[in-house]
Image 1 (tube, one colour):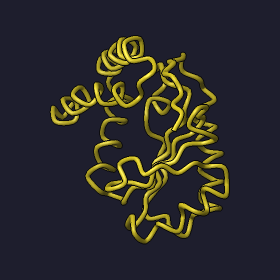
Image 2 (cartoon, rainbow, N blue to C red):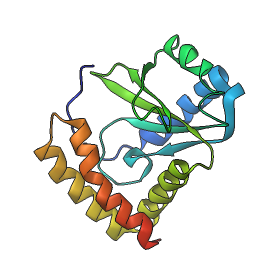
Image 3 (tube, rainbow, N blue to C red):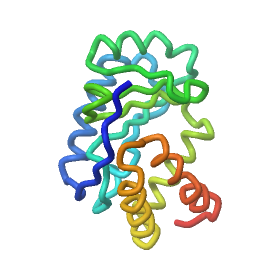
Image 4 (cartoon, helix red, strand yellow):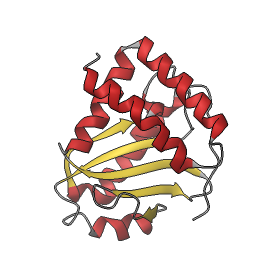
Length: 169
């Protein structure tokens, strides 16, 4: 799969609108598998945080097995499926791996991964100091690992884990 390079941009007030538009589309297309909620996560969900200009969407499902038919439906509607972390989610990007505007994560609602992502997002939204530290880390990693998304993501994990386990709010 061709990978897009990592480029962080200033926060855009259009990202929440883009999320809401895509959320409505997803509910229309695969709403029968929705369990719980559809959440805007990732850095584009945090006001004033620099981010890759890709809207991350977490779509709650009952189970990965039950929601497997949604893979074909999303593939027919502009999303590219990848078995990335297939043991905990169904992962998609749109419109292509080389140029991404959206990431879609079908994740069992209230799973450990679900809870961690919501917790981290909410901490970033409510704690400007943690958000600033995270932004600084992301900027350094984006420079260091400009063409390696896997390593960029992997290197962020220790910070994310420390924040989640510390109970910041």
